[in-house]
Image 1 (tube, one colour):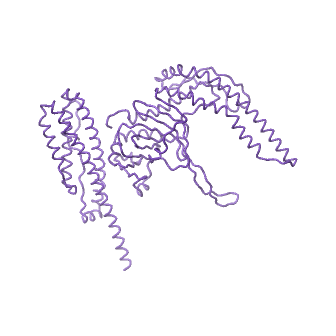
Image 2 (cartoon, one colour; image 1 turned 90 degrees about the vertical axis):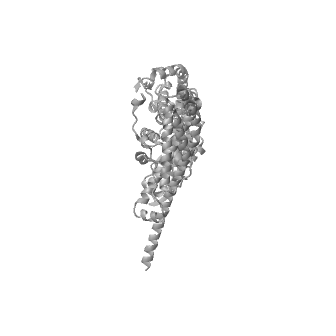
Image 3 (cartoon, chains in turn yellow, red; image 1 turned 120 degrees about the vertical axis):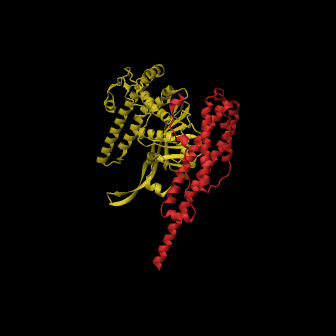
Length: 355
Length: 188
């Protein structure tokens, strides 16, 4: 990996609050990519992103200035309210103790609204341009989402109460249709806790993340009518006690290494073996190594749906304190997309070899 | 007396469960065998089309084409699925047809006109797909047979199996020709 020098405009949240001057950044742009790809990336950047980034740098500075004005005003209001609360406390006049704290929370949210708006603007206007680098048919959206009913019907996702979607990308790579969506599933669980004050056990409700990561839908190179899922190994005891998963029957495959890492369930024993032949099993294991063994997938309704857990957001907008060159975002998106394309390459979904 | 009755009841329950498990395994193997037959029928339906196209070009391969036709006819005959030797014979014939079809596909290379014929190309592609399905069906069958045979051969399953007339079933093995190493020099 070849990296050009990265810019630094020496601003962070503390220097921002302390009044460090907000300046327009017109410095060096540092893109990072594989050495052989870098010229192509730079050419695209210069043609499509550089002209628009100058306009957005002005907007960024305006947003930061607006945010700082609001922040200072908020601080004054909070200080005033704190003072009134203290006076009220000592003079015996009616007062509401949590008021300064509530005001702090509400005003902080209001103060940073311009920066949030700027990030949304970047995602709405700049990100789709960045994704066009991978092909004209690539679409980026925050509003579009995968059909949750289909994902649930694929029988890979765990139980959940609440679902939230993130970035959505759709396109075609080497003839393979690709759809990516960030997904977070949470569930309210009841746990018993010891209350230190009363020394008694009490039941509390906690929100636990059941899945957080990417869902990747790929058009399959093989036609199929059944439903096959590849799950992380459930363990010997679970398999001894049950030979099924959500109505799908266990498929015992010949590869002992694959069997150690995964459990396969299907509605069609022959079709599952047709899809998961020895070559494909090997490719899936290779891919699992790349994603830390946490890969699960389903062959369902003529699509290969892959579930890749990951705690961090993959297509995040960089800090607003950096100049609006978008080079870091563009480099990161390129890296992430190359990883997703590698899935197609590794699984050879673009090749109709019969394997 | 009560202890004896309890012991006998326990032995009866265990034996019955063992018997159920053996029957289940045999039925899975038979289901897998049916899966193979479904795919073999698909291939049998495809063979006449390939032969019809091939006949137009392959004048010197008449004996091979006749052999394939005969094997296909033999393979379409009914056989006793409960008889391991009949199953074995059926699978050997299926593999023999596979070998001959393989030889035909190799010989197609010697006929450039046939090789470039669109209908033939499509037929060959479909044939390859069916072969991939046969291979998958074979893996399922061999996996089911492996479980059945292990259960039938190990004591006390062997006694229960002999009482219930559940027999070991043959594996669907590839032919010796398919196992032979490929000499790349022959094709270069």
